[in-house]
Image (tube, rainbow, N blue to C red; front, side):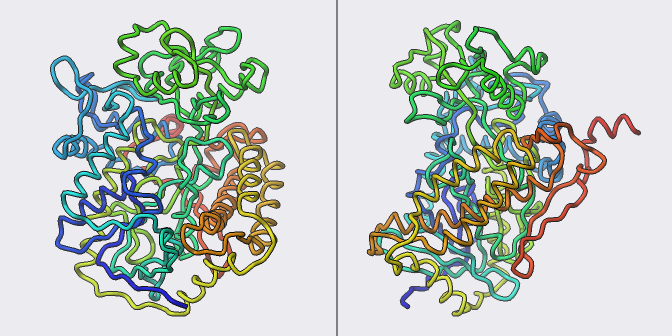
Amino acid sequence: MKYEVIDTDVLVVGAGGAGCRAAIEASNHNVQVMVITKDILGKAHTVMAEGGINAALGNSDPRDSWESHGYDTVSGGAWLNDQELVEILVKHAPERVLELEEFGALFSRTPDGKIAQRPFGKQSFPRACYAADRSGHEIMVTLVDEMRRRDIEVHDEVYATSLLTDGSAIAGVTALDIRRGNFRVYRAKATIMAAGGAGRIYEITTNAQADVGSGYAMAYKAGAELVDMEQYQFHPTGVAFPESARGMLVTEGVRGEGGILLNKFGERFMKRYHPDMMELAGRDQVSRAIATEILEGRGTEHGAVYLDVSFLPSSLIEEVLPTMLHDFLDFGVDIRNEPMEVTPTAHHYMGGIKINAKCETNLKGLYAAGEVAGGVHGGNRLGGNALADNLVFGAIAGESAAAHALSNGMPRLDRKQIEAEYERVFAPLERRDGVRQSQLKRRLAKLMWDKVGIFRNGQDMRSALDEIVLMRTKDEPRIFTENKSTRYNMELVGALEISDMLLVSEILTRAALMREESRGAHYRTDFPKPNHEKWFVNIYVKRDGGEMKLYTKPVVITRWKPPWMEKSS
């Protein structure tokens, strides 16, 4: 068994918006910072965010405020949000956006030169600051440039496989160097988990290929507490046709600029579901409305509905939706003259690693930020809040981790842990036959889409859980690779990914079975209404004695009271 040990003060796992912002912040505090990423720097899923970043700047409407932003976030999140985290998000978001400008970000402007803001779903005022429809790309380019300016060390194409522990504290991670095929141990005084989401557990998704849920899996196996893991968001508008692009994001900015949804009969159907907010209702609400239209036979031949902006001035479309225009022209559709076909697509995990106001987890030395962290978004994330979440909590995680590193020594490494992980990582190379990881991935993604998707019920989810457990116990131990090299062996990477995907899918399904009501993005046809008396709680998941334990805690109200509580008082 050969491996190298690499030491650093602060280790950041993931190089998306949250990971990059965490590294930048930690570098301000006289500590050594190192970032590892399974992709290459700048290729994170954050670049695929298009529509905007929320901040109550009041440039489009001076009545906007952090209080209003907070209320929209909590009410849009079905009141499951951690309100302390929400308050931090909405108070700090304006500062983080203006800081991006100082780093060099170029936002779209109002006629008087201020940062332009567009309306997004479930928001009281237009507050999504945007760079045309390339907002995430602009933010990532800016953060990467800032990291390079600071000479922050980045290790590309390194797949973190597990968290190492020193007693009850985190000691760093084990990792596979994809490029060279080497096994590595990264030892750190403080570790920041910013590994992104898990959209690839679903058949149709906006997410990048790398988003397989590794951060959740690593944290769970190390004993971290996870929260709201039943709450997975399906974006209302993904590309429906051509098949090769199915699921690709069609930004909420399209609807923010006035786009309307039509069924195959040309009917603007949102008036049946949410006549007050129409196309700018919550993402969970619009997704269910579109899915209902399709299921009841009012969808297009491609299993979709129409999203139309052709009535808008062509010059406006060219200015504020250039990416959408270009993408659909590649598909043979000119959105200036004809509608797009869209369908719901798996998009964002609201659940994740439980953090406090300092981004601390229940494990000493482990911090989390971005999509991998839970609590901020509750049962449904508002469009524009993810980029704000990345920057606000990325900065906090970086500061907290640096402070921890300055006051703690280097942890000890447990050779037995390293040996066990080494054997697990390379085991598929030793097998001569068995199961292919690609087959398991396709099987799991279809299973999750069909049985633990937008509409759920107990019977389907129990069936899905049985199959997931079977795959974990019977198929996963039999995964083999035809390629026996360790260098750039994407079969081996896939084998590690499906292990993480199966674990996250089991956690999600068990939590969804436990919540016997409909709330936020979690909609059960066998329990179609919210049950405030029994289920106004957060569901937690934790590994305890080798078993998966699920338990509940009442939602804590610190500032914003739900309407049913207002009525009762």
